[in-house]
Amino acid sequence: MIESADNPFVGLDQLFSSVVLLDAGLAIRYMNPAAEHLLAVSGKTVRGSRLDSVAGCPVTLMEALTNALAHGWNYSEPDTEIRRNDGEALHLHCSVNPVDAGEVRLLVEFWSIDPQVLRATREERLLELQMAGRELIRNLAHEIKNPLGGIRGAAQLLERELSNPALHEYTQVIIKEADRLQELMKRLLSTHRPMQPGAVNIHEILERVRSLLVAEFSGSLAIRRDYDTSLPELVGDREQLIQATLNVARNAAQAIMRRTDDEAPGQIIFRTRVARQVTLVKRRFPLVLELRIIDNGPGIPGDIRERMFYPLVSGREGGNGLGLTLAQSFILQHQGTIECQSRPGHTCFILRLPLGLGDGKSTI
Ligand SMILES: Nc1ncnc2c1ncn2[C@@H]1O[C@H](COP(=O)(O)OP(=O)(O)OP(=O)(O)O)[C@@H](O)[C@H]1O
Ligand SMILES: [Mg+2]
Image (tube, rainbow, N blue to C red; front, side, top):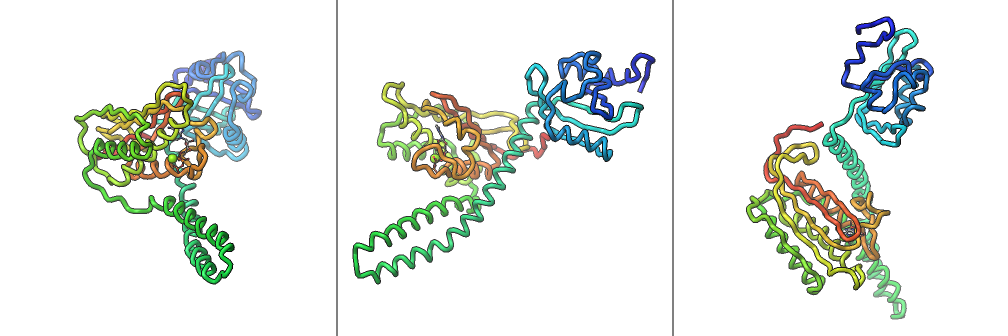
């Protein structure tokens, strides 16, 4: 480090990363120009102020600072949210290192994160969380499924023994509810089936989904096709892809049916395109199919938007909240992703599926 009489930390001035030096009271002793720019403050003005009074710091960072002082522990966190005093939230890679340079005791360094890497990190964390939840539910489903057969069988035997037919109403409730639960458990466990990959034409799948929906909603549905017919075939499990697409498109159809009469006519669009050099769950693929399923319904209810891919989360009466969970599981098995953008009058689910093998390069 080059030192000068009036600024002993002049060497740090040249760094691209943002450096803040703190004393034992977590007060700022120095910040380099990159840090001044990042936090939109003047180093001279904030000298002597505590770091957390100059910018909003998460509890984890404050604990890391205390631990670094007390125990000499280093700390590194790839996604720290720092809130500038002008209200802007910054997502930064942050590291804390104990130092022994007179009154300076801690060196805190921040780097800006590439938005693509940030998105990939977030996706990965979200997926881990969802996977853990799904595992729990799957185990629970197994536990519920087994005794259901016994309950149903016992109710049937009981029914035969009941001489008073009026009492059959009660055994029928048990049998019907057991059947309903059995069906639910079957759906919950359906992602367990191993994939049966083969060459698949996405437009053939979409046409099948379209005819299923037209039959289900008895012609009251306008589905527009906007296909890129030059798309190559993809390798996938036909049944899983039909199920995933149908679940997303059926939600769109159901949403459209909830509209009031005075709104513009309901419409769903199936759009296929090819995209190049796309990162899907940490792997980069040269060629990716982008399938957009767009509807002009009321949009995803705000209170479930963040959780709609979780199992048993539903925003509609009679919904099981499994359609999107299963769709996401099937698409993930194909190394693809599902994303959703929604506002009233425009909801778009984007399903991305690799059209070839990835280069195996991780983006993180
Ligand atoms: N295109 C859409 N427009 C508006 N809301 C939607 C749309 N797609 C999904 N949703 C909301 O997300 C919720 C979850 O969907 P999901 O398919 O997982 O479960 P469900 O439709 O409630 O039940 P299931 O599909 O298991 O019968 C829906 O209940 C609905 O509120
Ligand atoms: Mg659904």
